[in-house]
Each structure stands twice: as structure tokens, then as C-alpha cells.
Image 1 (spheres, one colour):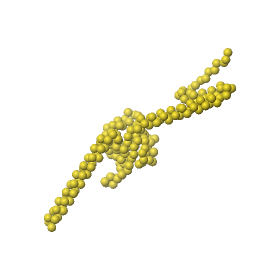
Image 2: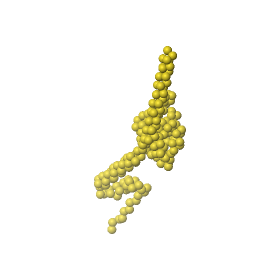
Image 3: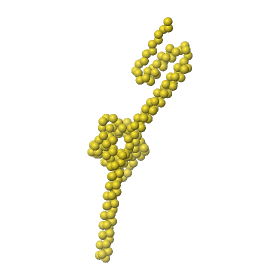
Image 4: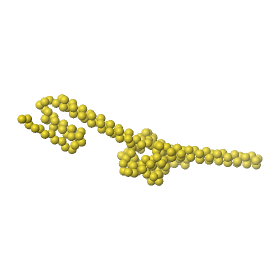
Length: 193
């Protein structure tokens, strides 16, 4: 019976040691993935503080990791985007994040809540920089709006009766000035003869 107890204690110790080694290897594997990923990864505590930020996230925003970890994550989200991020937690979202140089980046990502081994509520976020894509979309929308307004003006002038040209020109002059980005516009008529 003594040998049996010793064997059980030894087997239990081996299982614990094996579990500890497996846990350490798992932690090292996930740390290596997070540290070397091009995507930005961060872990956020229930009170909103960054517990972990990947090197790619800190680099993207222009900060050292120590400048972010321990600080309120809401400080790194544009104020106009905070409520929307809360409403759409768990969904793919785009928000603006301040860069250290004073500008803003557009970040797209997902956030998922989970419980730590100790039962604490945490959020993991995986983000990527989509600033160029968002700028291109904004430029496209501006171009489409401009083309629509030019088409409206063209239709107006094509439908204009010859007797109403002067009044019609005055009425649409403000639209033309707005399209050109001018604050004011003038129309000068030279009387014939």
C-alpha cells in the first residue's frame, strides 16, 4: 500500500508537471503569434484599461507599448466613434484611432469578450489599418456627389428657355460657386452693341 500511495503521488506529480509544461508551451506559442502578427492585437480589462498591446498595434499608433498598456483604451478611439463601438461589440467595425502625430487612422476589427482563468471579464480585439481604403471611399463619394451636381446643372441649362437665361444663370450661380469651392461668384453681363 505504501508503494501504491507513492506511485499515485508520483503519477499525480508527473501529470501536474506535464500540464504545466503544456500550459507554458501554449502560452509561448500564443505570445509568439501575437508578437509577430501584422494584425494589431490587444487585450482590454473590464474597466477599459489595456492589459496587453501587440508591438504592431503600438507601432501603428506611433507609441511604445508602455505608453498604451495600463491606459484607458477609450483614449485611443475617436470620441464620435465610442458609442458605436459599444453598440456593435462583437461585430466587424471601423473606428478612428488617434496617431501620436495628431492625425487619425481608420482601424477595422472585431472585439470578443471572454473570461480569464480567474473569472475576470476581458475583451480581445484584433484590428488592421484600413485608412487608405476609407480615404478612397470618401474620395469616391465626393466624386459621385460632384458628378451628380454637374449633371443636375447640365439638365437645368439644357431645359432653360432662351428668355430666362439671365434669371436662370443667377439662380444657379451659387451652385456653380459651391462646386468650384468658391465662397462667392459673380456674373457680369456686357450689354450688346
